[in-house]
Image (cartoon, rainbow, N blue to C red; front, top):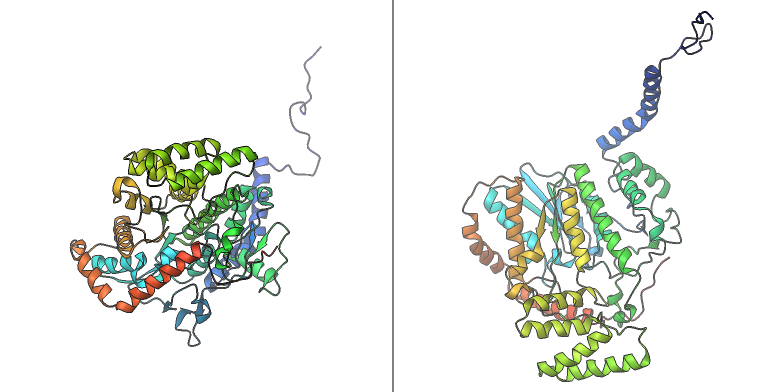
Amino acid sequence: MPPSTNTFENTPFEKPGIPTVKPRKRWSLRLLALALGCLPLVVGELLLRLLDWPQAAPAVDPLIDLHHLQPLFTLRPDGQTYFIGPERLNLFREAEFAAQKPAGTFRIFALGGSTTQGEPYSTPTAFPAWTGLDLQAASGRTVEVINCGGLSYASYRVKAILEEVLHYSPDLIILYCGQNEFLEERSYAGWRDVPLPLARASGWLNRFKVAQMTRWLVQGDADRAAKPSSSSTTLRREVDALLDYNGGLSAYHRDDPWREPVVAHFRWNLEQMVASCQTARVPIVLLRPVVNLLDCPPMKFETLSTLTPERRSAFETAWQTAQANADNPPIAAAELAKAYEIDPEHAGVNFFLGRLAFDSGNFQQARVYLQAANDLDVCPLRALSSIQDAVSQTAQATGVPLLDAEQLFVERSPHGLVGKKWLVDHVHPTIEGHRLLGEALCELILQQGWLPQRDEHWRASSQERMRAHLATLGEEYFQRGKQRLEGLMLWTQGRAKKTQPPVTQQ
């Protein structure tokens, strides 16, 4: 049989009069159509960035509703300066800055909670102030530090402030948070239903002005805001901490199911804040928080609820006997061993064992017990180790500088356990501790090259600057700090003045 002469045998069929579009050209046309479709969005984004609108984007969070939160700073009627209004000074300290940053000024915003603010004293002796003084001495530049530390402010509220201050021409953001994540009652009922990639995508989209404008048009102000989902908690405009109410400790219970989502939410907030700074090309420094392990017992501890009556009775007998024999270490240790065998996750037992181990010279074992006491605290007013690790891991994953405040104090504490030598209470550094943090931050900033160092001898005059600055404050300043410390101690014990319990808005 002769070979086939069909010329169409191995070629695609072509209809007469219809030109064939090659696959490569077909994809080029599709990409061109896609680009033309996106062109209005690109033009709109560029125009909104040029106009810097909206200036205060609506807060975005996949787990809680933030639409009630208000900007921290207000523009004065003359349009020359921003300031913190009197209605916010119960939680913040006075601060203001020029709307148009003066030429040659290096502007720093310090964000976080009460440690950033300098509690129990105030912003003049907080670590950001010392950083500013040292930077001016080392660089010869005008350094402007705006302290945005808010009492009881957790990461989700700090995030809203960060998004705001990125519009105020910052040269650097300093972020110290992680101690306040368990202060406000929140519901995480549907947190596992929000996939992490979707949450990250939501945060990424909100960094575009077009997305911010769309949200602003849809949400508007609080009166027109969309109703939150049933799995979200609507935050009040200002912090409503459980411990702000008399008997607030009663709201905390052991094995609370919200611990895991609180830590996950904290990590998400950190990631979003770093990403926002990187998008705005503003450097950010993260600080790993420090806590008082050695001299601060747990704020609250409870016995395991699933113990049988017999086991509970045995535990209570051993625990009470150990406390009654606190001045007799061998007996106390023997009784604590019995209690630990029954309930090894009792925060009080772990703290007592840690102190006994420290006093006997077994410092490695002491750290294990004392860290467990912190992480098992029923009322976690100190950053959990998982919170601390989230800060370090976020810095490593995103490539931003980290100042390990914990390690800074560990290296200067007896046997590596931080206590009252450096911290006035459970988390707040002494003035000398703030000075240490401020100087370390200055060194990090100079190392990063964000400011050029022009005076190699700035460290030599450090103590002189500190004494001169403290002399300007007056005795009344330090007396007020001592009074606030007394009030803070009562607050941690659930002995605040408010009498009505906080209401969680669902």
